[in-house]
Image (tube, rainbow, N blue to C red; front, side, top):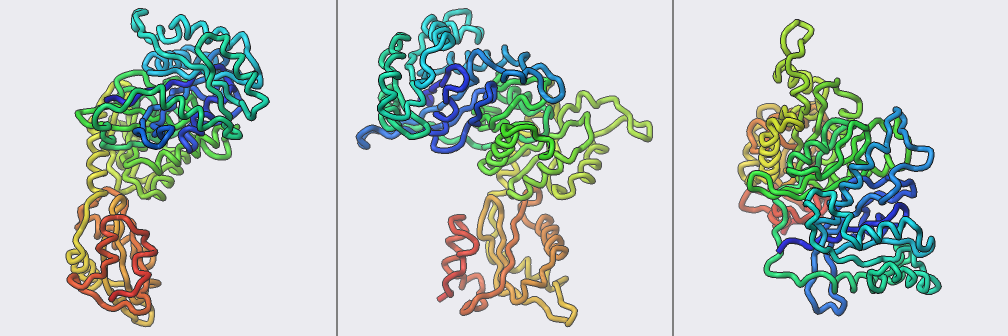
Length: 509
């Protein structure tokens, strides 16, 4: 059965994002007192335990929405380049309406300590009359979505009477909790669990690929996500920095299930104007960490910037498979090079390789997210890279291959000391991680490691993904081993379950 959806709505600053983070037990949504921080629908899958521990775990999709009614902070209608942020109002309200329309339960958040406001009463009227979800374009024939009031900021017993005042809104007895003190947290989660349907049959399988989409501002990330999802899932605007959170979007594409993570458009750290931008940068890093592959979007109409290079470096440090995606190619077609010839994909590829040397191994896809051109090719590349990162080379083949390289061209010291390899093994996949145990690890300089990497890419089944190389000396008690005499630690590590540093802590028998 489909995962039940819970939409969290309310006016700004009632603690919706803090509530989502508390239930999810991790930082999902940006928490900041500035109105208008949350703009898109920010979703996360959450497992709810049964109250007595004997019932089934219920998985729900929790969706945070923008604060309804106020979309810009006082005195901050315009951003630092003069763009009118109030122009996003219709888009934000559309995303709220979509969340309500597709939900199985709406949690209407109100602020216990602030008391009932005219804005709360207005939102309650919209929910009661089922008008909040009609702008999604369903002709007014909406199904009735259950609504429960959730009184936030109920930090202790003295606030309980104030929380019960919200029963006047007409949505049954209010739920209550405090994200700050966790007061009534367990009671609230138990009641939400009871409101969700019983699991029916086998749970839905996990997605086939988690794909982080990163890039600088206005590179077309949200447009690409909407094109992939086949619906306006995230807000697309010419205003730079519209997306703040990392937005998870699940969908089927070409018969395969995917989770696309749309991240905030980034700019240079010294140009960041507020804490919100720093939070957005942190969410982008987290998105890369939990992805299976990354799409690094470049704007074909602009030169590769310092931000693009910083993002490329960020991906390198995480060892994630990456496709360099050149977007907006439809706007470049017909432009001339300095030599007076039309710009070709080959010209741009040469330019990218020159500017992003650290990703020389990564494939390049040229697309137009707006027109839908070659998007399938870019996604196919991402799946192919994910497959490469999961390849494994047998220890025997790897030992013969590496020994052959060193016999042909091995590192030596100025005094003529030669490297001796005791054994080589691929100890992990995702990313492919190769461990070399040698007598003189200090002879493996950065230049020689680059040479090894190039040879690995030529001969091993991971030519276009990052490879992690670990070189260390032999520890006391370790001896030369052949393929039939490998310690159990290596074989266990081939399953990808152990830390590299702990592989050979025990002497082989």
